[in-house]
Length: 402
Ligand code: RFL
Ligand code: PHB
Image (cartoon, rainbow, N blue to C red):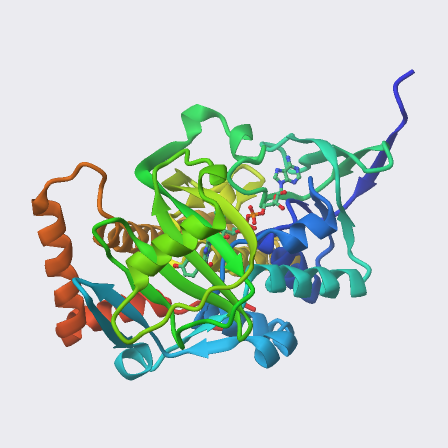
């Protein structure tokens, strides 16, 4: 006999408890709007998933304005610039001096932990470990979010609006008819192998290194934990990269005379493909896509998490006007408003990526062009300012979006 379906009602059904879904639920609650969040994975999995590390100044301001600044202010590391390394030199770009803005190193794992703690403290409805998520009735004003909860019960939640915050591999984007979507996509002929290591960072600010053997990045998580990445061929098996090989390659690509890369125990290792992807518009009827569900950037510009947070800041404001005041203007403008920022970040991420990664099999021309561009952004004040203004977040988030 089919199990009984439990029917309920909410204003906003949210698919996914990543940074986008969780922050949206939080911002809506601050406006008095009710939501239900359905998440495929367990709370522990969501809190441990290693991803981004850098927050734009606007993202920090947004989290603070939303009452989420406590641990971020205590533990986040404010960085006033980055290093670009190429042709044996390491040059510093001073964002603070160039733009008056900074970024903050605070891991996505910590943002997610803070958001889950805040939502659960407010007795929010977050269902972890759901299966069989479905969205229906998107072209009506009563869309339905259905899922099977961890206890096996089937739920049907009638909503005013559904927010697809279910990442790149979620189900929401696929619920939009293909004829109503325009997809722009580029895959890159390389991937990143990332490690998390228990060793104090060997640098005060991030080092982005162009090397003829491939790109390398030295990032960090805390004064005791470093995060490092190596360009590798797409589809690389981590088993081919024992710790010794990873450290030796990092030493080669990041090393400079008189500078030491400290090594330590590797806590985690993984390979990430590199892709640019935009699906537009970001709305279909009563379904609004936000974050990686709608767009992916390669990680070189540190933009993915920041875009996800920016989308939901705009969405919370638009849904406030729609659901509390019956004004549809901001919701109608949602997709265009977000896509302006999305395309700026898509361009910046593509530009940083292609400037810093040697294409396998490329001729000497590519390398000379990359080095000429790196020389330009480290010697021309206007070129350096352009990089700095994009990296720290341009344009700043809308005031009052929190
Ligand atoms: P997420 O984090 O993927 O969350 C989506 C959630 O939806 C759930 N889900 C479902 N739930 C219910 N039913 C279903 N059918 C579902 N299908 C999926 C998933 O389990 C998940 O919990 O998307 P969101 O919220 O849009 O957040 C986006 C960010 O996670 C992402 O853009 C960043 O991590 C990208 N990124 C970086 N961004 C930055 O801003 N700065 C960085 O320094 C940075 N570094 C990175 C990165 C991403 C990386 N990887 C691994 C892709 C470095 C790396 C290596
Ligand atoms: C990270 O710390 O994970 C990180 C930092 C900067 C990037 C990408 C990833 O551009």
